[in-house]
Amino acid sequence: MSKHRHTEPPSELVLRVKALESLLVEKGLVDPAALDVLIDTYENKVGPRNGARVVARAWTDPAYKARLLSDASDAIAEFGFTGRQGEDMVVLENTAKVHNLTVCTLCSCYPWPVLGLPPVWYKSAPYRSRAVRDPRAVLREFGLELPEDVEIRVWDSTAELRYLVLPERPAGTEQLGEEALAALVTRDAMIGVAKVAGPA
Amino acid sequence: MPVLTATDAPALLRKGGSARVDADIPARFAPGDRVVVRNLNPRGHTRAPRYVRCKAGVIDRDHGVFIFPDTHAHGQGKNPQHVYSVRFSARDVWGDEAAPRDALYVDLWDDYLAPA
Amino acid sequence: MNGVHDLGGMDGHGPIAYEVDEPVFHAEWERRVFAMTIAMGFYGAWNIDSSRHARERTPAAEYLSSSYYEIWLGGLERLLDESGLLPRAETEARIAALRAQAG
Image (cartoon, rainbow over all chains, first blue to last red; front, side, top):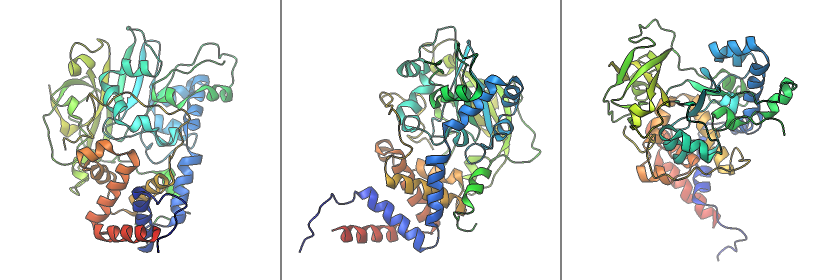
């Protein structure tokens, strides 16, 4: 007798993952409650709002900015944004003359404590292959055209240093406080594929 | 190490696991030195991307001493050594079609480098 | 290794596909793969460099046609098998059993 299916059978991937988790749990190698905490941390608790706060602080507090540029790990730790894939931080300042862009050509290295987990495009072959080779075309695809006299620096995270771009503060934001400034800062600007837009 | 529990997870995530090694290892290079990436083609793990092999650059900064992944990945020890940010001009890596002012910064271990 | 993961400067991979308001995970199985990989990383049977190398050893054509977390899944299966913690035969047997159950 065959079962009447109301839904599609689970995909091969779903079966593989179910198989793996059931075996790891049975063998006492993973605790499912711990898995849930890991997921919750990176799905809900850690994300680019962290980096945005660091950027807004740097824009409004010159002493903080100096600390951030000389010892990024310690300065970022002042906010409590520490840990896995962000133990050794470097902050790169964008100016009118220098534009920094970050990539991990070999895999997907990314500063998790300040930006959360990377977007799919950052981890995929098109960005990883082209960011180092033709950054201007890549930025154009993101809608950012930089003048020829701007020096573009592409940083490939080949080691365990994790890079955060400190984007330029947009014009017309002099009256804004830290919280309002942080709300303007996008993840893309902290990777270096965008600039921060001023208030609407 | 014991199995990760829900209680321990948050603190362990916040602590992370830095690859930095507290060892007094001399650096072979200093900022400003001109270096060339050696023609290494290991069959195992490496973090020297092919696009910079045999290319010349300048040491921009010394990040300090870290675990060496080429040996660590294969259970052959941490082999701690300096990691440098090496600046390459885009034209030196890709040729004259690259923008003249643009540069690539790649983090490279001491063992990957030779004096230029 | 001179693997296809070493993508810097390669041509032919096409335009960057940008998803607006992209979720952190696109499916439940991705969440589980992410979490199991991190948890097993803490277990200590291997280090992060070995785990990267396990992903790099995905056969080239498979690497280029797999999604990000598919590569993580394959890497984790490879590490578990090679460390002896979970031989492939056991995993395969369980997959077959689950497939039979699902009808």
